[in-house]
Amino acid sequence: IRFLRDALEKFLPPNAHELVSGKLHIVLTRLHDWRSVTVSEFDSKEELIQAVLCSCFIPVYFGFSPPKFRGVRYVDGELAMWRADFVSRTTITISAFAGEYDICPKDGPAAFLTFQLSDCIFQISKTNICRL
Image (cartoon, rainbow, N blue to C red; front, side, top):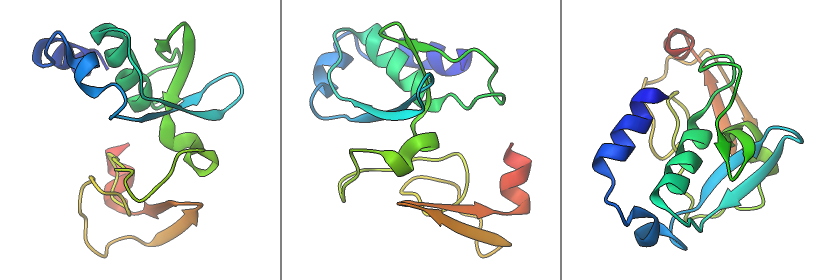
């Protein structure tokens, strides 16, 4: 997560939050009630970075203390995506694991188990397990 923060701070322009507000929707999972939350307005570049970091945080894998956005702890939006209030044809899904996402690794037909939970299709494969 530190590497991602450093890259975002370095490469995003100072007005990145202004450029994406109202256009970029980031889905987060609120930790205390496991509810899906969509954010699309950002008051600063730092707030945008915090939202991105929360949306990428996988509990246990990245640690036990999730980052905060506006003072509240959030984790990867996919963890509650099946309860999301914002899913449409224009939603671009991103995952570090192979599956039915717009942006993800392509592993081919190696999955030995595929299951669907609402709009998310998960593939269990040797390669995805190694990614953990």
